[in-house]
Length: 547
Ligand code: N01
Image (cartoon, rainbow, N blue to C red):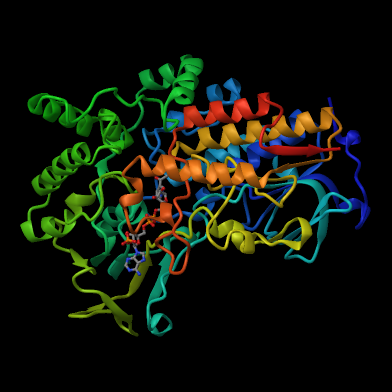
């Protein structure tokens, strides 16, 4: 039933600009949220998207080698069996263009694009407590108001270019991987410098090395990486995925990280050494994020983690021919998987090529960028292209880039000045009727993203439906619920080794001046899903609902 008429759309601006809901962002989360609000609840909704087309992360991250590290059959919306049956992934891990094609397929199939306004950036959103409406200003000079405001801005969308002296002097070209030019970049015959060895740098390195004349990789933190063993999907597997939708969905919903596999209930430390080695070997052959699932205590026991770290070091040493290079690549300063573990296609092998050099910038820091390239404390590197694979102002950056003003004129920047504080990652005290899809304090980036997104969107949709059915005007979390949840997020994180990675973006440590707060919820997707369902069932415990 359409609820549109039920909403008292109080006009404080032009009539045509009054909506039931505004969604910011047209990536995985924004387009599904639009479908739910428009097609399930019958609301009048607009989506604003800064890019010139839909896709979010997958629109911007077009760098060479960009590929998903979730298994393709699980990197899909599971709300519609019809969509699942109609779409066919080609590889075990889809490349960026295929994921973007998938999102366009969904948007077209559900006729979503007519409500999505691209090349429109939301500059400001302010809550009008009298009218109980969100007032939104976009960069094309328009103003809109809506009862509900939903951010679908992504966790890794605000790019981070480190402030290195002399950046503007470089006479060559430079690019951030998360804002890659659509025309592509031709590396043929070029001397390339790549800064950063997170998931992105590790994916880009082997591909750039294939065409560049020379590639210098500037590594600050040695990173564990597990081989993807990517390959085309067999017809048999494609058939399995289509014929077992319900089982795969159940498996993903019951797993800790929303992946279609479970973490094995055994301890690395307690397993006999020979058997442990065999299991690690087997897991290495399977590859990808599933490696981490071979034992259940790898992220909770330092001793078990060390065993995994030693195994990975051994593997890297077997691959990399020059022992000095292998030393740099295995000089880990954090436990395995305490930062998001990259999944690679021939990353370590790339350092056996004679056109690739690794520079450890811990030993030999980058001093400045010059007209000709990069200078470290002991050498200079002449370059034609610099690639910044330097990550994102994760989880909060994209939200804080919008000037969001809540009840009583309180700004999001102020209320989060000591780090993000939310209830369930879904709502912020002082910001009624604002929902943050995959916000800080939710499993989000620790989970297979589509699973985390669908759970949030479904919860928000059900909540809005509940409000409409009961003629409720506002929902706002209480300060008490927020403080309790923030403590819980910290407590759960401290039971694991994840906060031990001092340079991790999970902690905001990659951005100078950003408060050090562990942002994602480590308690597991299945547990979190139950908690959210329980909150709703208990009449939205921790929220105040008003008429
Ligand atoms: O970013 P990162 P990313 N000088 O922050 C280095 C997701 N993702 O884009 O570790 C020198 O992880 C920095 O060094 P350090 C995934 O969740 C998914 O790679 O801070 N180096 C680090 O090596 C991932 O975790 C896929 O010491 C500097 C690198 O830059 C997340 O995105 C694919 C520096 C940044 O690594 C972010 O990954 C790709 C400086 N001044 C990414 N500043 C999928 O497959 C930073 N660095 C879905």
